Length: 344
Picture 1 (cartoon, helix red, strand yellow):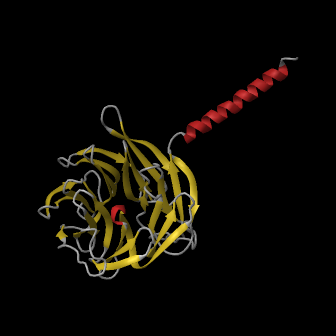
Picture 2: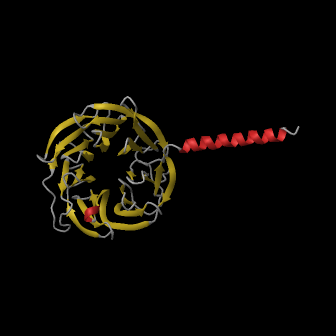
């Protein structure tokens, strides 16, 4: 009889240890660590992370928020855009650049420390995806409705400067990536191809099909691995493509409504509007596979990765339930804008 209580206690201890181990295992992969409740008005698009300052730059339609990723506090609000889409930063010049696709299209140039507008230069209608290519020291912008790639030096005069002659792409670009050696890869969403642009000749030198994917939107590059990671919507695939010859190395099933892909180290990611984040890794035989599908939140289709901490930030909102027979985008609930923080 005296053994009954110790045995019961021992079994209880073992039970709770097993629960703890299961919980620890569940948290050992990528998971939503916390949620930053931001609120405010406006839409959302590409999120950019400054790994040096851990600040998040979040376009919200008519303005762009600057958020401290650690505290979740809004430390700046850059006004004056019509349809803000994306942000690129050049810390060595203390400058940031916001694409504004409204009207005739423009680029807002701002001070990274003061979050103050330095000036606005004219671009092209539907100025959208934007990156900084350190290799050629150029800001690169995809202009969807204009079927063009925009380029200019980051030290451009913010009030009187002009973009360089646009590069015709022969299709509607979505997002883009650069190899730091003079080539730019641009998704042409309406053509189901990647256009390869030589910045020296300023011409498209190749068009690589993304089949068996289609409607390519997200784009990221692993320059060391010579691979592109392309998020496609129709059908919903992550296409792994060689930058050396355009050969499709793998096609992986992902969630619906992908908008962004990213790369960090040996892993790649695809954020999808259905509330999933696909984690892609390379197996021992050299092939790529979906190692994990992280449950995020509905609408969390764009993201930014902090290259220092490895944390992933996904903006989204709460949405109203769709009415029977309704189509189109779901209606967001006012004041519910938030950013999910995913960590490993």
